[in-house]
Image (cartoon, rainbow, N blue to C red; front, side, top):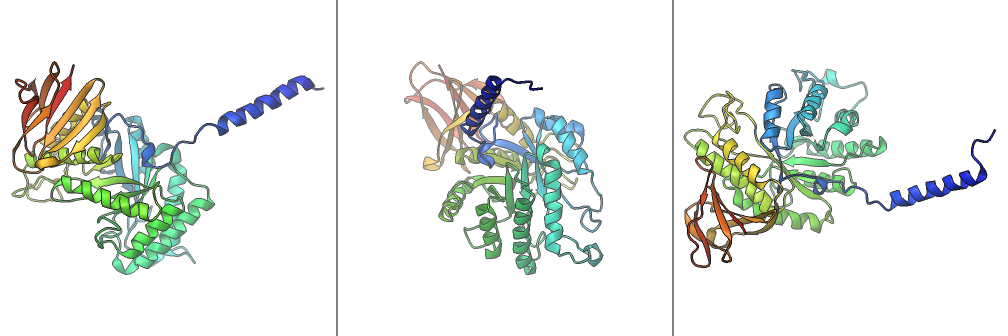
Length: 421
């Protein structure tokens, strides 16, 4: 017995064709970091320790304005992952806190399998890494926003320089395996370079070649770098150099993600106040450069020694106290939410980033060092509110209008002038 008449059948055919036409006319979501939706000028992440992060920490991270957290995942091999952390549970906890995850699929000196007995019969080290990475991606595709392949392979801690050819083979095998199993996450970045690739000659050519091949095959959507440096402002020019080199290699679609960058407060080198200035300016320079994703290193100090650099990269102390970097940055995020970059200028030694939020223009002023006088031109009748973030947040008047605008002293501690009707 026919349920549908011929006329009804023809109607359904037309409806199906219309649905196909409408779907085909809808542009697919762009892959890569360029497609990140964020409430802020730069989507902000912070590094967490999978072994110690608490649910209270995750909730506080989200409330502070962070939208992502980054952590590394290691294979279930005792030689490289002795704690056997429950990563699926951690990913679920991150999601419950309304955060997105940046998951770094760690490589290692032996590509994977640090002991002979860990190699499967007939398996190669490269296969072990590919099987681990693709398997983990496949299992958690819907719950991880950003995947990062490897971490600092140009640093001997994470890859023995003698194994660069093994890395090329592992990268190629990973991309082939992803294509074979039809694993194509929306954002896959690599390789978390410790040095700026393609510029300066510090990154081995084999690693650069591996990245170009992976990006051209659509295996990697973006490049991830770790631009540690004495002052943040020099990153702006380096981003331009890197962008030019990527374009020269026909990688115009490849975006730039900053998957790790921070400053430690440790004696006698850097006070908490100086750390706060540098972390704040780090965020500002990424906004100025149009970088979409920045991961700050790190959430919490990993030790209690005041003199250890590696122990003190956190914006929270090891005991859970908020450091000045936390306070200044998160207070700024409250103001900068829903704002967009208008312009950036570094003329006469003064950096000026202008953001627009609703009908207000937010002028953020600072210098890399010594204090300088600066005047922001403002039409008559406009209102100006000054916001200082150091040593704590204060709002007040910009003072009288003079010289066609409002004046301020710019220093290494950024100040904001909010101009509105």
